[in-house]
Length: 222
Ligand SMILES: [Fe+2]
Image (tube, rainbow, N blue to C red; front, side, top):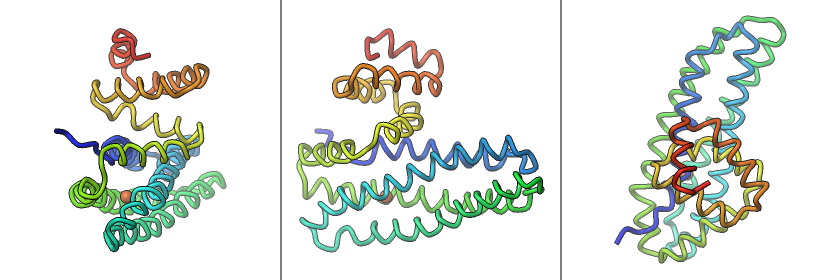
């Protein structure tokens, strides 16, 4: 029987987010303040999700794993520390670019550096998430039942503020298969108050194609 996958939903969303930021970092005109503003807004969303996600894994998934399998969380926790440092440098560089452009300076050279450094970071991050799915996931299956893994997810979801949840949805929802997307949003509908559910649908409509959105309406998900 198919076991519950801890990482599938968030990692698909993060891979989508990182790819979008990579594309925009390469196509931005670093002399144009409106273009840099757009990049910074996307950067803010993406980096904030990476920070929230690492904290969720450290505080819930890995901390629970460590209790049942001492030493098993160490590798991923160390990865998170290294990723955090590189991410911090990227965020600082992006803030620097933002300040330069708003002071009327050409930030093209710093923009080229941001694009390249971000690509290196992107590669490291993809490897990290794949390793969590190939190595850590089997350990989680070995030490926890699906009910326990679902409880970890519930604990993580319960910690998210409505604003952070909406930011997650922007990247997670378009990255799911139609079946996964319907299951995710049906679950959300059962838990959310109607006004918040409608607000979330407003966010989701902007990031799905009209066919994808209509499919959710036609199958009764939303
Ligand atoms: Fe991670």
